Length: 113
Length: 111
Image (tube, rainbow over all chains, first blue to last red; front, side, top):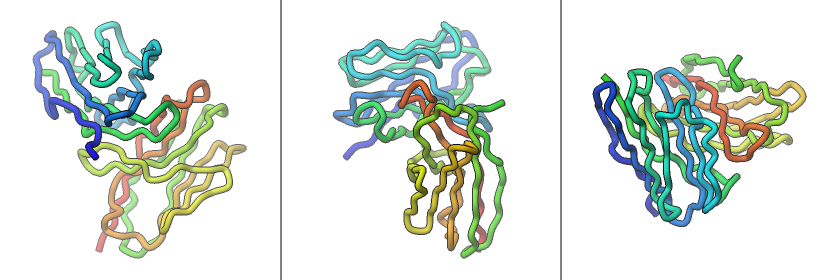
């Protein structure tokens, strides 16, 4: 079956612009996660959605970052007023339910000039 | 101090060699432990979970020492296709879903 998909695969933007990154989880997976991987760094947890529960936003690095998940499926991560330090690979993962194996998408490579 | 620490490597070994990676974690409340594999410019993929009793999957053996907060991965009979970055991953003690990743250990298997 289809895995987690993300779009765009690459995004180049200018400092100060807003960007939206999209994630389509595996069909039927109720849990969805966003991570960030900066150059030479480990993956960093950003936010978690589980069904209709309130999301865990504890990993978002600043209030410029927000995410939503519509209809319990597709999720969008929005970064407002991008900064150069936001340049990273943004990875989305989904799991059938909380605590089960997380399957990652291919990521969106964001470059802020 | 990072929550999960790994030797970044690279480990450069010949085909057929046995290689071991180590990892330490700082949160004694961590409940679940994994090794993920990440190929260059690709997403991480689960290699294996790590259990207290130790577990084996073909050429791969994982061990967990809770007292020392130490995790290991042993790869026997290395193949060229094993070349990748190996990520040590634990869950944060207060949740079962927040994966905390080490920075990874890079393995290069040469012919």
